[in-house]
Image (cartoon, rainbow, N blue to C red; front, top):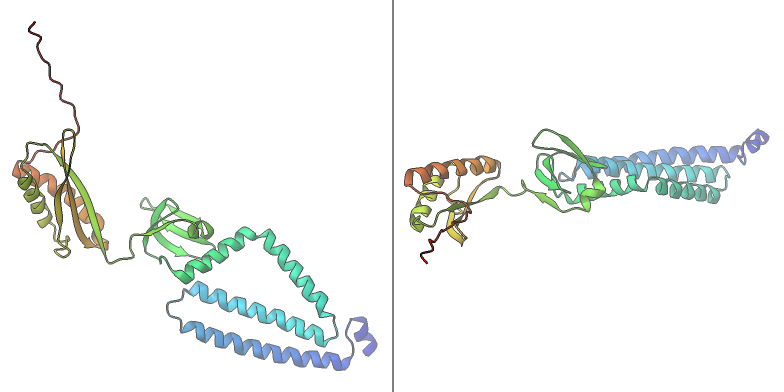
Length: 268
């Protein structure tokens, strides 16, 4: 029996039994640790499910490797060469899939820092849309024209991320240009009347309407109003339409950049 085991690289029956015992113990310990880690991660209510799954899988994989080394050592197999082989294989694998690993660790960073969540309207790396999902390798956006975009997580972490949904309130900024012949207070009153027509515009913070700048052939007024984040685009377009109607009712004249040409008669 020992001769057969030695031909297989196993020292003796005692070594085999020892290895079996170690294997059982390692399997039990692995199960206990993975179960404990799972319960601990479940208590982290703010942690993304994908990150929980990755951490649990990583710990389990590490415990499996440790089990293999312990059992191999009990069987009398030289583990130093096995560890070296695993290290070389791991290095070669990491070099061959370094882009994948970069996306993976970037995905872990995003799941840990949570600069956005599913349903947020964001701008990332020049792309704008609603976050559909944030995985370990890609972040998927749905654009306003219903196009799905998958951005590698390494590009996401290296880019400026603008999250338009992060705060409950959002400010709508608009500018309107009118002619010089309009009275300043009349223009402001007309804009305030337009603001009052939209119930989605909040009274607090108060709307802001002021003369912004004198231009070559127009006077520019700035308008800033606040609304709930979900009402932003309704307020944006309603304000444009209401201002146009209010200007027409109040006799305020729009204007645009133009050049006046004066012809002077030469009397000589």
